[in-house]
Image 1 (cartoon, each protein chain N blue to C red):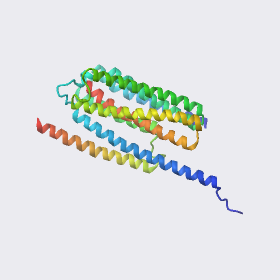
Image 2: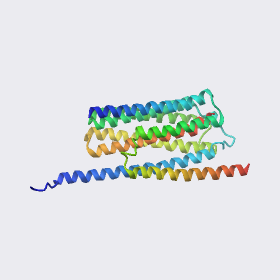
Image 3: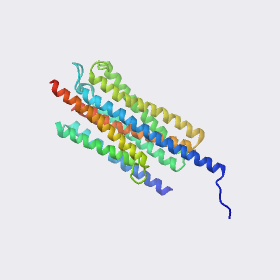
Image 4: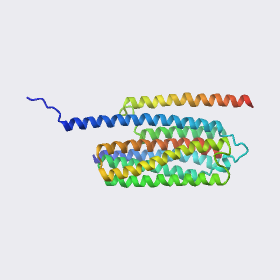
Length: 101
Length: 202
């Protein structure tokens, strides 16, 4: 009992440390102006995607072994819906924007 | 040898367990639909982010230090809610309440900073009605803030429930669901500083 709660604490602390690093990197880059343009956007995007993964694994405890299949199914389903709706909206609007120039 | 038949209380217990499990699944489905709402608000913001309509630009209205402190408050509150969850599995009600109070203070601190930011922007003439950019900004960040406000209210309610009822199974289940909600809000905030604030000041 005591042993497993120690392990849980370690899990949260590892997740927290990773999240701090993955937050500090993009903030530092924008603050110092080390990168600009596409490279900076790319770095912010990559850090954000990794950090979402860190939160899902270390804070929400998503794993293929212990999370019920239905929950994973809905997570995947939501991801597909988001991809279609956000991707589609941005595609249409950016295309429209370019044509109106 | 006689068959062991489960007693009425055991059956009730099992029934309750099933009911709580299905609520946890239902709450997960709600969170996923909420994620879709946020995703579409993000898409709206990305489309509108350059539409300043002659009003203030994102460089003029965003303060990265302010955002960094908000980010820190929310991230630490996610950790302290995790500690409350661990204390719950240990069955230590006092510790749960303690960590929930810390989480609540951090959440309210975040809300206070957001209100100050919004008020400051409106005072500077950068209210939600000024441009497409500002409408999208206030809708997205305001919706997240509203979620944090509801979450903070729920934390206060759960502090009361733990004190009044102790760590019964329904209370544990509610705390677990509230934890999912709270961590989820932190994930949305990653999107907000990565899509709204950081590119906004670049």
